[in-house]
Image: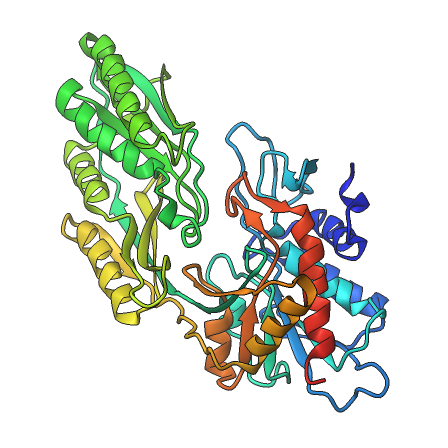
Length: 483
């Protein structure tokens, strides 16, 4: 079965078109052009700001012009992650989609349903004349995944509606009315190297098989972090086998849990069997710890070409001690909302370059002071050993409004459509809603979407049946807004 055979065709056909348009974060030129051309082709008024954000307007059905406009919003960029074995260029290649039973997934890459499904739904609404509605404004924002810069730089008056449907949530049957704020902390160790001595065996050590996932939505699941696992092994092997490292590379994006890490290292030839035994024992221990959360974890060891140099002994010790000291995972749970993570931090990436070792981390919290506190904890782990640290200010959270008229409409709509109560929740992941409130303080907002799993990883997939439910729900809310 092809994606275009799925129902509702209105969304799936648009999503299929979107998968063919490259849209990495901060490189959205092609998808921006696609949306502009879409507006022109369908004679729909639109405007674009200097960031690339776009608003397309659809006039009210005849007789409903006096209704207040409703804003539909989604982000047009996507997280670009792939399996190490997958050959794929996110700047040129289309996403290969696969209908896999009840789910749609991609072939070895992220699918881009986050938030391509929201984008597709907006495009579908703009060309669907089967239902009556008031004025509609479809807002498409750029660079949500790597800084929320589109939402941050949106100008007052760019749209006129005072109610906004954010189409960027990942659980059908749930409506979100709040989210965490977030920030990033960037670290740099100046590169210090030593010549490679003789009599060493050169090795490539790989931590692999982890699920990774969204550093907000999946952080509470107890999945392994490849950077933490690798750092702990290096510390052990340095002590037991005299292991020295030439490079450390793990993880990619600040908002994704590190799935893989690769270290190039050396040990004395006399330790060649001991290092294998140590790795096997260490791997078995971690596999036991992660048997429920990450059952496919493994570590591999192979010989490789000799590196040109090693990190200095001092740099290696400072780097590894800081990576071990750096917190990762859930810091605190909410005291007000059951099962909601309040504060967390993600040791996202470690990259060795010709001039330094760069480390990316991200922090989230629904309490601003807690967000700042955990950021300072991360910063101290590295500044205490002489690394340069940059604490980025980040973005605000979104405080729930349980008296929201839009929420009340959404609750009534879900009950009417599905004879069930929609769950009202807050999310630990970041949404653009908090930033919209800075420019539009009276904006009434909710967020919802179909069921997605494995977002920000090559395991990303969307549950097909929930897309129909999402579409019916969206149409019902839009058609009944300000009725």
